[in-house]
Amino acid sequence: MTWVKFFAAPDDFPPLLERILVEPRRLFEVYSEPGTKAREFATAAAADVLPLGHDPDGNGLALHLALWAPDVMPPPTVRRIDLRAPPFPAGSWREVVEGCGLVWLHAGGLNGEVITASSLGWFTQRAAARQCTVQPGPNSVDWVAHTALATSLKRLLQRELTAARAGQVAVLPDALKRHRAGSRLIAGLGTKQEFRVEAA
Image 1 (cartoon, one colour):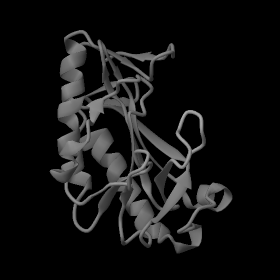
Image 2: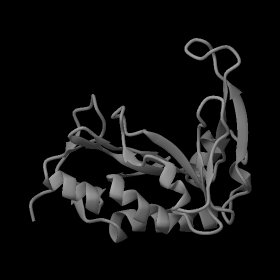
Image 3: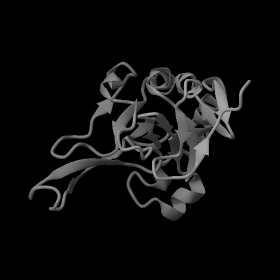
């Protein structure tokens, strides 16, 4: 898979979603909360209920979301899965959203005095043919449209919304402001990989 890493804090996510979540695209929770259906969002305003930009566990995966574009692939599969006890009570379940042409958002953010990295990721056609076994499968993806979407998202993160760079990693405006005020930029808690924006 291809992953584009970036640093974003709470005020960075609304402008990002306003650019990527345009009609008729949809944003899904990849995994629902236990006992609930996976939520679907049609607008950036609707997604305001998500605590984007906060990473209480510090692993860069506070939220796992998926962007679906109907010109890229058919609607994703929403599948119910049973959760094993322990730690879940018997009979627990959740929903998972699947599809080989989705774009995944792993949202990091603030954790105390650090900002963990976020990432956007997607399959290439070759990687999907080798690795993606869910439905809609690789043969149902319009790979020309998928490549165009991936290119536009990469340009958005690495050029249009970027306020600075920490090495090769884009730093969005709110994250940069907090970094300048002392917040550290890290891949995730428990890792030694730290990033810095050189002084202008």
